[in-house]
Length: 144
Image (cartoon, rainbow, N blue to C red; front, side, top):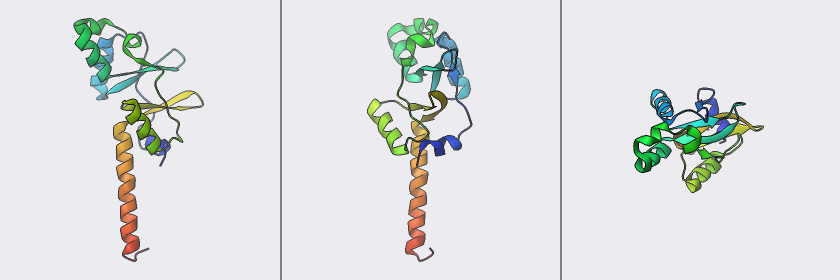
């Protein structure tokens, strides 16, 4: 299974913020959309970074309330790992596990087309395994 299949089952697009947005406003976007990360994009919709709830919490532990006045560019992870539509679910899981991150931007021809989360990837893997198990049960039972 490839990431294209996951993207096809998600609403089109992604949630993004500009690099100069204040963290207080980024937090509002995260809360309003019920998401754990936003993509940080430049003026031509070019991916410049990713900013997660974890980034905010880590900064709060060091900078306290001053965190709220920082910009997305100051807290984001610049140049995040990315994938393509053709990246397999297994490859995405390996990238996320080894890199210790939970969100993976998806690019096509250098342009941003979506974002998959570890939850998306795990759900796809579980759904695929359920399908394989049911197919094998049907085969073994003689109901090919």
